[in-house]
Length: 259
Image 1 (cartoon, helix red, strand yellow):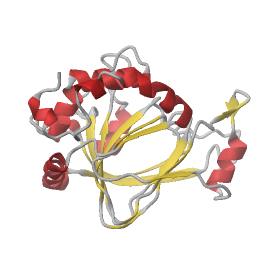
Image 2 (cartoon, rainbow, N blue to C red):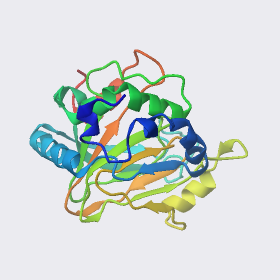
Image 3 (cartoon, rainbow, N blue to C red):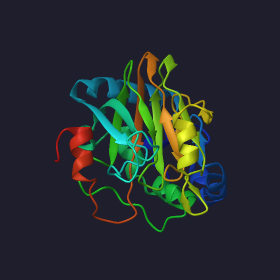
Image 4 (cartoon, rainbow, N blue to C red):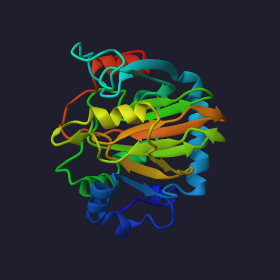
């Protein structure tokens, strides 16, 4: 059962019965590539989270990274401007898990057995584990004016995010569902159309307090630059294998340290 301290901060419909039916969302996620649970956090819980995020922001690490859409090494068999090698960029500030207080709502959500079981069922996974390093399981990400997340595919099969604060303009999440492969091979032609702005993807209207689960390994996605205000996004990061840390390169890039 959900403990009282979680019931007090979750949206009204997110009760024990709701969390016992995760498997009914599996087919929706598979077909649409995305699930959005509106008002997952109540107004009271949202106020607490926004204050916590604001209090922590001065401790955040500012990062900017360059990468190709596939977040992989340069392939010299393709030109630099090819969809395989073309460079994207991301900029943001980030709070790692070890700076988030133990009594945080975020930690309570992440550690909840009933919520993790719900995630496991809707993702059709045998088990979900925290990352073994102290930095990577929960992150608070801040996008200020000009910050953006360039087009890319995720390395992991799924991403779980919670929107804590929405910006006033910009910061739009856009994706193309399940389009990575064609006849079992990378569909570079379609990726090129996306990068050249010849096609438009699905734009997601997400609101403060919404929880989003996304299949990012086969679906290319981006978040456009923030134009006005600030966007604060929490990621709940799990691994399917126990005892695995986030890569050293990723920890150095996003947190500025390894431990």
